[in-house]
Image (cartoon, rainbow, N blue to C red; front, side, top):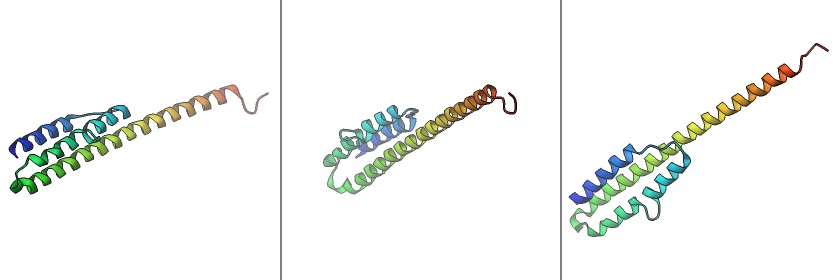
Length: 112
């Protein structure tokens, strides 16, 4: 149980330090930690080695760890969506200004 606790704490530090700014890195995070062959699944598999009298505590620890990883994933995903939205808005504003500028300079209203 102590070894399991140490592993979970080490992975929590690694996950806390993880930063992503592209959808690809977020997907890599999801696959590495939450995927079918991911870290969370493999750690959950260690429950079979925990003594019966410690299974309840270990189960709670692992469930908290899983929720921690899922929350980090959602946070990364939301942050990237905000970055993409801001970038998209900036591109749209630039395009709108460029078109407006071109249109007003190309066509002089009220003159012939």
